[in-house]
Image (tube, rainbow, N blue to C red):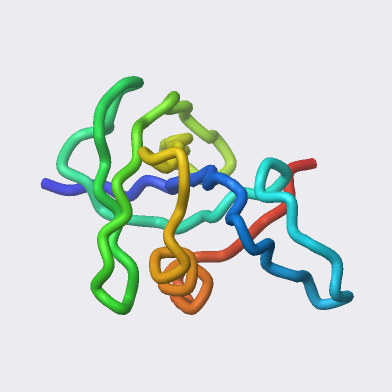
Amino acid sequence: MSQQIEVSLRIPNTKVRALDEHGYPIDHATVRFKKVIPVKTIPKAGDSLDLVTASGRTLRSSVVRADWHEERGMFVVACQYASKSLSPDDYGALVADPEWRMTPLI
């Protein structure tokens, strides 16, 4: 039986910085990409988690922590992109996927 979790993915800054709607460079240390996915078991800190984009690209990540979020009624799993750099193709697949939403840290 699967259950829904929300993934909160931290990615590294790209060499050529993406720009926001005002033309300013996006600092990816201040945003997270979020998506709700089904899992068989709740991943634990240190586990690997493969995240798929709509284009079929797989982004490998490492789980940092998993916390129960009472208001959403699900676990929120904080992940970090597994590599130190993010390829332009992987970044493009992530931002083009309508299921992934970029949210600022508050």
